[in-house]
Length: 190
Image 1 (cartoon, rainbow, N blue to C red):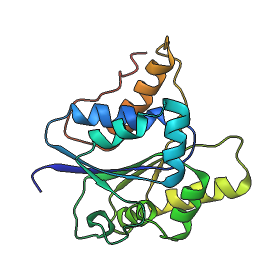
Image 2 (image 1 turned 180 degrees about the horizontal axis):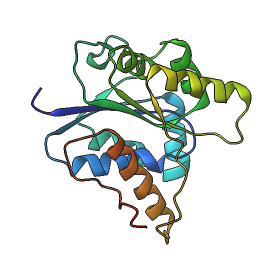
Image 3 (image 1 turned 90 degrees about the horizontal axis):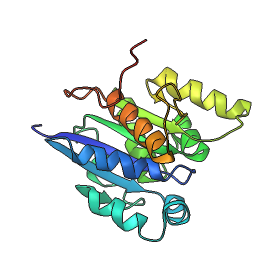
């Protein structure tokens, strides 16, 4: 595999600006191929939070788009080698489906493949407050090898806008993929 293939799943939780910024940042990296799958709820959230053109912008940035119901797509197979997968944002419904292996759509199936193939899976779990079921599902996916990264803002770098917060979360998420590039997020200097 000469190009780094990254799967981006977008579920319907709040935080629709994050996958947009992740794809923008991934476009800046040489030899990255992106595979996008967007849930039906995410389509609605994207329009509500980022405007009616957001879904079109998201789809246009991806190398390849996969319909949520196409469980026979390339990203549904372990033989389709990838560098990793990000689910941003990751709704509690999607988290629960991943935790229990209920691969009833392509987003969850692709995440399941990443777990079974021991590939990097980063879940930007988005909900608050959390009940015990949410926490147990987070523990379950972490025990299976996923990285649970709630999109919590970091204030130590003193962001001056929502865009700065979103950019930092996107950069930290991409850094967690372990790509052979310099870190995108500014490092803490003490």
